Image (cartoon, rainbow over all chains, first blue to last red):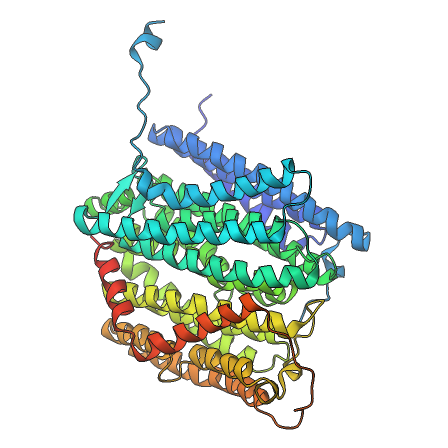
Amino acid sequence: MNVPAAWYLVLAAVLFGIGAFGLLTRRSALIMFMCVELMLNAVNLTFVTFSRTLSDISGQASVFFVMVVAAAEVTVGLGIVVAVFRRRSSTSVDELSELKG
Amino acid sequence: MNLLATTTLVVPSIHYLALLPVLTFFGASLVLLLMSALVNTKVTINWATGITVATAIATLVYAFFQWSYIAHHGSTTTVAHAIVLDGFSVIGNVVIAVSLLLSALVAHDWAKRERVAGADFHILALASSAGALLMVQANDLIVIFLGLEILSIGLYVLVGFDRHRATSAEAALKYFLLGGFASAIFIYGAALVYGATGSTNLSSISYFLGNNVVLRPGLLYAGGALLLIGFAFKVAAVPFHAWSPDVYEGAPTPVTGVMASIVKVGAFAALLRVLISALGTQLDTWRPILFVLVILTCVVGASVALVQRNVKRLLAYSSINQAGFMLLGVWSGSARGVASTLFYVMTYAPVVVATFAVVTLIGGTGDDLHSIDHYRGLARRQPWLGGALAVLLFSQLGAPLTVGFYAKYSVLAATIDSGGGALALVAILSAAIAAFFYLRWILALYADDDVEGTRVHVPLFTGKVVAVGVIVAILFGVWPGPLATWCQHATMLFLP
């Protein structure tokens, strides 16, 4: 069965949308964080699809960079979440309300 | 086997003069990191500051050689056209090096006061600045993304650096989540532009768009819009500014200085490259979007700042307003506009670092005395410190005889040149609103009802940084010629 390239692009767009929607509506820092990862992986899928349709390898090379960046973000992000959790015993962003005005 | 025999790897030629600043910054960061890990006793703050300052000065020396290379050989690209060496990138390197040098000196005194041991601050600041240097020189969307991430990931940690205040970790989490969101939007934009044009290289994109009619421009427009949103987050343009006041307030004050200077330089340099050099042919498409962004950014930045009592939040909104003016030069899209934005960013960076240096001092041990009331009568108790802050604020306000005036004047002139009279008018009105809160702060400095308050101790390095900021504000205010000419030369070497 041949799957048209457009389907992959639509799938990626939907995944990206789910990620963005989740980031804006969920209140747990960990879930929000997973949503960012979902968005980055949607980007990877887009890059790979275009790389195939354009017969150009550089799109696939870009994916490696995005993956490395995502890994680095995980390390730092979890560190920050843990630091906040230690202080408050919660990862809900609703309780982070000292800064406003 | 045959395949292996015939395939040779083509290694792109690398022009090391172009990469030297980035390599030096990363190298210094790694050296400090290894020293912290391998040396038995903690690396002292003196060593860390010494190495950071030496790195910044080395970059200024390279800039001299890079400039003379460009003057003789013209601009060039290297590493398979992913990195540019042109006048624009040299100026960006200089501004980032100067900002880091000043910030490191402020952080030195801050770390001594707060008893922060070790070289962590400097390691992260050096790595972040290396990311900004990469953004300034990038000629490929992926390289811009890498620079952006290297810049941001270091800053996420720096923002949460102060373990004594809960607000610091809170700001770090907010900055991290929204920063990650912005990065994802940016890279998705890059992916769509890649799909539409077949390349992530800015020169190739520009070449493709110049020689082809894009039949279905939806992909390109969507990609360009997402790239623009990603940048708008990073420069804190309204309506993507919500994170910035919280993060400015929560971050340790020297880090706020870094954010207001180095991040702006990196983001604006990359934004200019993407919009002018890659998407220059689509000027009529992105201009209306930028038009709305500029108006919102100028007006909201200035008017919300009016009700702020916390000076760090106030400076956050002030920097949003300033970002609106910088975007104005981008909007004009002309060589003159690029030069004026460059001049604006270049002079704003040292002034804002010096302003945050004063705020660091007044913040006191614990870094939490940031109400505007703590500034009452400062200029009467300590005429030099208070007077310096007044000059720095006058410069951000755009008062004549300070550099802020010429910077605002040149972006407005470029805008009117490109037919943006209405836009220039809105910007001037926003500057008039902004004048209120700057003047309110300056009046508080000279209030005579609290002359007996406590005097703050001014450490040697921070004092020097404030002095540099004041000198920049006044010297280039009365004599902007050489700097403005330099920016124009740099722009000529950048635009094709």
